[in-house]
Image 1 (cartoon, rainbow, N blue to C red):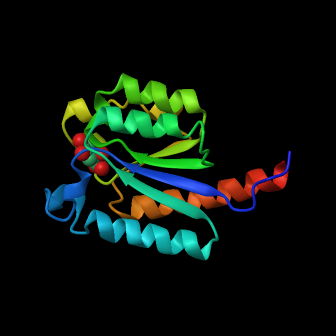
Image 2 (image 1 turned 90 degrees about the vertical axis):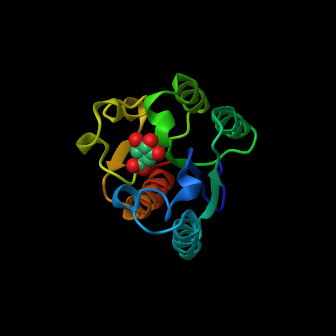
Length: 156
Ligand code: DQA
């Protein structure tokens, strides 16, 4: 099958990440979500990759967003499910259903925090997990996504 000319990535930010910069900076840093999204867009543009960033505080909206990808496919997802990481079988099932590879990102090191943050409903079905590297974690995930999409393109 012919490959699409330009690859596309969706970045999903879960609940309370709209408060980045203001929210518990000792855990989540001082950059705003907008700062992070702008850096991601700049890198994607240089790599000629389409990127959409999406934030929602609502579990059902995130599920609907994932369902919408069955019609408007993306090639890779970067997701920080935030608190839904530890609670949402429903978002896990949605991301599993659409069969798009994804990297799970957390700004903080969830393993150095409360025990309830040590379990993720996503990690075992993710391509990989980045936790504790702050906002750079998103940039590393994007770099990985770009490389892996290129590798897939070469091998198909
Ligand atoms: C988080 C970690 C979660 O435990 C927490 O609920 C968040 C953010 C992180 O990026 O470190 O909201 O996903």
